[in-house]
Image (cartoon, rainbow, N blue to C red):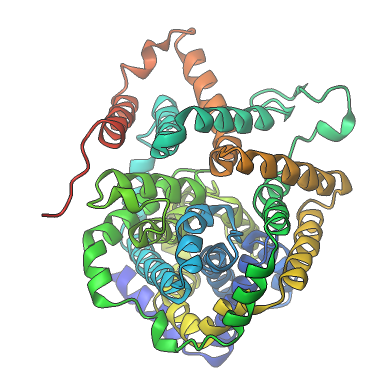
Length: 503
């Protein structure tokens, strides 16, 4: 009862005009940073970190929470409109949303992305407030072999989802894993595969790969396909009348997706968010694959599936709630953004741990309430007010648009790492991804391998070291067996089961 009273006090704190102003401004800042390639919510909070020295802890935490939720949602804007995800977690949205955009359903795709984000973010925040202590205890039950099996599940499923190019998906994933091995060893302070150069000792940052694989390669693809038809499409886009009600998904489409899909995806995202280091990318990948395996229309996936958008966006936004659990309970950030939020807590003298909820609940409650309000109110409100401007991005002259994207992307890759070398890597990866896309190699699999490769390696090596190199440890632990079994079931359902079709 005390916890519920404290949470009600958190919602009441948001009624203070100063705190409310920080929440709204944080959401708008997060939306801008999340939509721009290379300018993530992590960077937004990091740049605003010095401000937390000069304001009270409650407005600082409220602002961080709203930036986090907005940054996760807004990555779908450019992912849908120009096929460049603002964040790695929006890659699956780009796969489906941009296909709908090209068919003239851009507003509808953005509406489904916002609805999924709203439901997923709200459910994740509610689960965070209701079950944080229990979720923290359950997360401790997944030991090292189980974490390896979970990462393997994510890698295998996303490869077999693309049934027409499984071998190319394997090659792309392995290439991503190989790139991730460059730099310091994941378990020992020893550089490897740096080819004798000091610049590669620190490894390859994720932002140059994301920017190169999606932003730079997209610019090259668009430059190659430039012709008179694009000019005519541009002229049509300028005269296109977009109504705000076009962003509201029809009830028939929502019912076809199914309420169960939203809730299942939200629970998947929340559960994955609890695992330290998993992040929104894995949540979106796993939820997307699970939705496809049980879909009534699996053939629509990859061609503009609204169900795929709903599953991915519900999961990556509910991950926000889950990511706060290990950070608040154990001081272990669930993802890079919560790592920065952890710094805000420490700066203000708040030490994470089980007693934090007991002793400082009045300071944390407004932050949790901000996470909920940002998802439930600010996401649909922002889309309704600014949605027509999002869609009209395509009406900007192509030469100007993609030149600006190239500049912003490269500057973003530099700002994210403060390394000229990493900025040049973004160019190199862009050219590589351009040729990969021409040969139908999946850049999504490439990035997934890069993101999850280090986790796959360290959990495999740690598990084997616990059992003197005997791989039977993966078959003698329940959590590992569960995820391995889930992987086999997913492969069977995607590759061998006949798709269910409507009568």
